[in-house]
Amino acid sequence: MPVKLHSTSKYPTSLIVRGADQLGVELARSLLEQGGYVIMVDYERSVTQELVDLLSEYKLFTLIDFTSLTTLEDDLRRLDYVFYLQHKSHDLRERISSQEFLQASNYLDSILDLTTKFEAKFLLTTSIRAHQLTMSGEDADISSGFDTPHSIYTDVEIQRYSEGLVSEYQEKVGIDSRIVRLGELLGKGMNVAANSKLVELIHEAIRGENLHLPGDGLDADYYIHYLDAAYGLLKAQFSMNTRGKTFTLANDEEVTLLTIAYKLLEIEPAAQDIVFDQQDNELPPIKLYKPAPNLNTIGWRPRVSLERSLAQSVDYLRSELDRSGDDPGLAGPDEDSEQVQPRRGGFLGMLRDFFLSPNSLGRILLNRR
Image 1 (tube, one colour):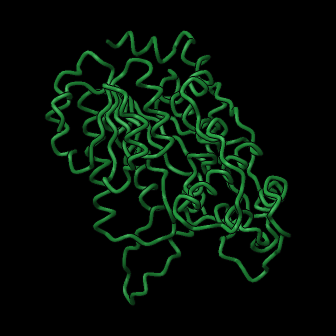
Image 2 (image 1 turned 135 degrees about the horizontal axis):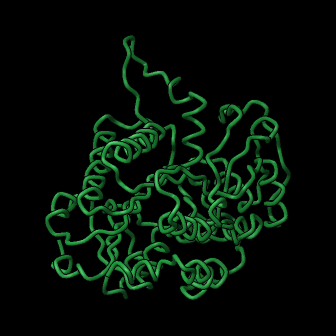
C-alpha cells in the first residue's frame, strides 16, 4: 500500500471500485481536477497501460488491486465518496462459480464497511438489462443440470444481490447511499467484448456484411454515451436529494435493434442489407418493464445524441479491431482523437454548469476540507 495514503487526510477522498475503464477514468479526472484525492480499485487484469498513462500525471491518484483491500482500512485516513461500478459484465447470463460470487459479495461488504466507518456517501451502479432480466424471472429459469436443486450464479444474480445489500446497509446501518441503473454504454466507453447484439451488429457493419436481427428486430434496450453517464453519476452522488433512492441513467426511450440497424446503415457505408432471422430467438421476451425514475428528475440531461454515440462506437470498435490485429476487411477512415477521445477541457466544460451551481462539487469539496 503506497505511503501516500497516510498523508491525504486534508483532501476530499473518493474511492472508485471497478473503475479501470473509460467511464472510471472520466470520473477520476473530474474529481482530481476539483482538488480531490482518488483511489481506484480493480482487478490487476483489468488495468491497461493506457489507463495508467491517462491518470499518471495526477499526484493525488492511487491505483490498487483488490488484493490490497485487506490493508486499505488500516492505511486510509479519510473517505468521503465511494463509486462502486457493478454494472459491468461481458455476459449477464454466463455462469460463474460460487467462489466468484462469494468473492464479489465479500468485496462489496468490505467497501460498505469502509463507507460506514468513514460516513462516506456511497453510489452503486448496476445495469438496466440485469434488472430487466431479474424482473422477467429469466435468471430463475436457468437449469443447473443437476437432479437436485443447485444454485446457479450469474452476473444478474451478483447485481441483484448488490442492490439488496446496499439497501440493507441503508436501512439498518443508515449509510448515505443511492443506486443508479445504467443503460448500455456507447462511445469510447462501450464494452467491445460484451456478448451483446449491439456489438455484433457493429461488427457486421464494419465488415461490410448483412445486419442480422433476431425475430422482427423489435427487441429494445436503453443506451447512454459514456460521457453522459459520467456526468450523471456525479450528479447523482453530489446532489442533495438522492439519498436512499434508485435511478435510471439512460436516454429517455428504449431503442429497438431495428432502429439501431437503420442508423448503422446511415453511419457505415459498407454495411449491407438488414436480414431478419426468425430462427434466432436468443434474446428472451422481456415483460413490460417500468424503469426506476430517470435521473432527469433531478436535472440531468444527456448531451450526446444517439446518432453521434453510435458513430463514435463504430469508430472505437474499428480502432480496437485494428489494434488487436483482427482486420475487419475495411480500411476505414483514420480516427480523429478529437471526435472519440474526450479532451479534459471538453468534458469539464460539459460539467461546468453542474460544478458551478450552489451545491457544486467544487464547493462541496472545499467545505469538507
